[in-house]
Structures are given as structure tokens and as C-alpha cells.
Length: 263
Image (cartoon, rainbow, N blue to C red):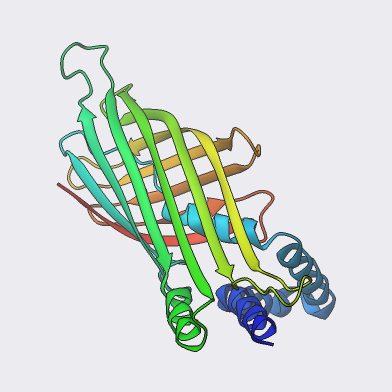
């Protein structure tokens, strides 16, 4: 019985993660496209979510990962994505980038080299895990998302930099229901996991000499899954915003807001 209860809780949690975005999208669609469009979109999105929920979660994880090079006059960047992860899904996250080589630091042909790392957790799942642990010592719930990699950057003009590199990216959500020796047909665990190594290339262009203002774009290609992730955005001294694109995702376009600090 407890296995069935936990499975039901798990399924409800996955649905809640996308609930707000779904409501906003469908409400806007109904205003402009009518009930027929709304019905078809509900069917399409529900089918894709049931068919591959891990891909939807991985796309949210990818919203947290950032490949923008450390500014040329700084050494460290710390970034956190606010929307759509920290709010509304309680998916807190931190992205770190550390410069290990400066562009033309030793000789003109030496590029900038940054090490990147990212980690996050869905706090709502952790709270659910605490509730489950208090009711069942044999049941464990865990979730995490992480990424690490290396980026190479080279300035091609006073205002433009090109960058490329490799990044390993992983999202995992596991509910271990414990062993049930009395029932061979009992579900022992539920796992949603996705990972890949991405080759990433991108461009950054300065818009102003007076204050930090940049546009950026990157394209990532999964070497194992052939998954495509891309981003186009604008950022200032601390704030950044733009759109992430997932051509095969549940939602093709994710609007994002994030903050970063350079040291």
C-alpha cells in the first residue's frame, strides 16, 4: 500500500513542476487561438510529458547551466537562474566559472580557458523526501542536477568574443521504495535520469563602452543523444534574461531570468 501512495505522490510532484507554465501557456493560447487549439495542445503536451518526463526535467536543468565566458578583466563568475527554476519549481542552483588562463596572457595566440561547474536541487522534492522518511524508514527520495566542463574563449575584435568547449550535464531524480520480499511484482524504485556530454559553441558581443551590456548566443549538441540546446540572451552587470530553445522539448522555448556576480 505504501508503495502505491508514494508512486502517486511522485507523479503529482512531476505534474506540479510544470503546472504554472502550462496554465500560462494555455490561457494565452485560448485567448488567441480558440478552444480547438487549446485541446490539441493539452493532448500533445500531456502525451510528451507522460512519454518522457526525464527530458522535461533535463531541459529545466539546462536552464541552470551557463557557458558565458568569465569577463576578460575578472577571474570568477557566480550565477543563479531564477526563472523558471528557482521560481516557481523551487529548483535552487548555483553555477561557478573560474578563469585558469587569460586571453593573450602569455602570447597572443593563447585563449582564455574557464572551468565551469553547476549544482542544484529541487527543494520541494527534498521536503517531500523528509515527509516520506518520517513515515517510512525503507523509502528514500533523492534528486540532484550537476554539470562540469571546460570552455575556451578568444576575442576576435574589441567587442566580440567566440567561445567553445565540452560540458558533461546530468539530472537525476530517484525514489527508492525499498525491498518488498513478500511481493515479487512490487515496484522497488522509480528513476528519472538524463545525462550527456555537450559540445558547445557561442558568441558574445558588447553593446556599450560606458556600462556592461552584452548579447550572447550559444548552441550545444549532445554527443550521445544528439540533443540540441541553445540560448540567446542579454546581460548587464548583474542581471540577465533571454530565451532557451529545446527543439524536441515539451516546451520548445523557455524564457529565463538570472543573476550573476563577477569577481
